Amino acid sequence: MGGRWFLIDNRAVFNALGKILFLLAFTMLVPLLVAFYYREPLVPFIVSFFITLISALLLMRFKGREDWQQKEALAIVALGWLAAAIFGAIPFLFEGVSFIDAVFETMSGFTSTGSSILMNIESYSRGLLFWRSFTAWLGGMGIIVLFIAVLPKLGVAGRQLFRAEAPGPTEDKLKPRIRETARILWTLYVLISALEVVALMLGGMSLYDALNHTFACMACGGFSTYNAGIEAFHSPVIEFILTFFMFIAGANFALYYRAIHVNKFVLFRDEEFRTYSFLILGFTGLLALVLFKDMGFSPFNSFRYAIFQITSVMTATGFASTDFNMWKDSAKILVLSVMFIGGCAGSTGGGMKVVRFLLMLKYARRELFKFVHPRLVRPIRFNNKAVPEDILQSILSFVVLYIGVFVVGTVLLTLLGVDMVSAITASITTLGNIGPGFNIVGPMANFESIPPLGKIILISNMWVGRLEVYTVLVLFTREFWHS
Image 1 (tube, one colour):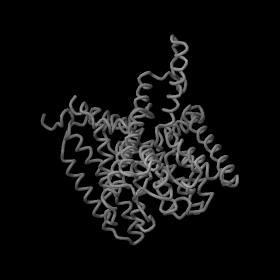
Image 2 (cartoon, one colour):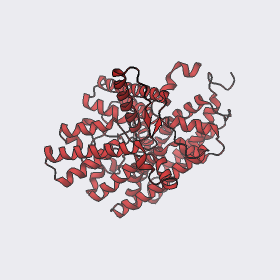
Image 3 (cartoon, helix red, strand yellow):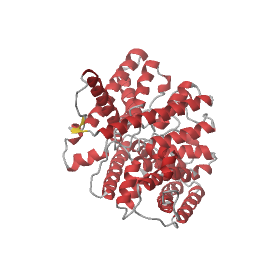
Image 4 (cartoon, one colour):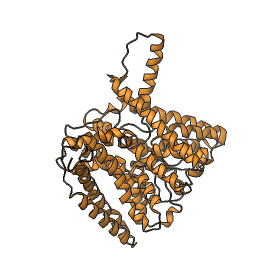
């Protein structure tokens, strides 16, 4: 069994984790430059860089096989994200944040959740807030996808990692070599991010604010450099710019590549994108009507707040342009509804994903017809292609596990003394990587008042939700290690 952890090559796992931390260490030099520019203490990032780098080099001393199987890939991805959150938390410790709170903040960042425990955001250094937003941007497209893009000669192992990090119903392979696919996705991500920075600066933001809010927006991460969030800018123009880019970030990036290089109409022919657009417009219309009729907002502000908040919550970005925690229940129920849907597969958005809801509805409709016509044989089609039955079964099991994790998280938070509404929304917003909820975890509040054990539960929720349940939960099964 030498060099093996049950049936997993632990040396290969440690070596890969070392390479991920090596990459992470050098990303810490970016906020170091920001701290240098603003004449802030450099020690937090210098120490964090060397601790992460030394740990990486020690792990890279382990040598295992390079043709990883699925189990190694699952372990590398799940533990890689956990390691990134733990080592990424080090800079926060230098500004008085406790270890659990620091890991909560960085897990929220890397998983692009946007939930925060920081009480007075504006009291922290610019370098730390930049790092906080930068973690969201790095995690938005995926730490492992970046790892695949920059590391040569991964081959089949790279494909295993790619599938483990984004285990959705479909795999968007743009090129025969998975490394080329990863590079294309990251290139698109960087280019669209650059466009957003320019747009926000034209809208009135400083370069620093534009970068921070672009990182959070493109990652569907929701972090802001201000206590009041987007409301601090008092600018409908900035809100509409962010709404546009949140919508872009919540759609499938592979479709953008195909629209540019293959067929410009591919976006509008894609069932998931059409459903995604229809849901955002539909819920926006309903919420705008409620805000206008029940709460007395002007027609312009009703539309402004509705489209921003629905897009923000459905894409799991979590930005807030107003305190929707103060809205009437008729408005809040619409916001809560889209928390369970999420963005498209292949996007940086969180949640259960539109394609799963779409296929579940089609499956339910078919079963309803089969109840009347037992001998009916009708395949479920998506984008004019028959969906294999094993994919449908996988989606159903995903939904059961997703709801199970949500319920367990809610019950445990309630047992810890958190009120029901806060527990429900804290559980779904962390699992769906959305950000704010209602009551004590509302958009103008934060998660600081959650008990330490509750924060650990929510850290787990973010971890499980970002890797779409299976990749993390499988590590806690006996069969994973013994068969």
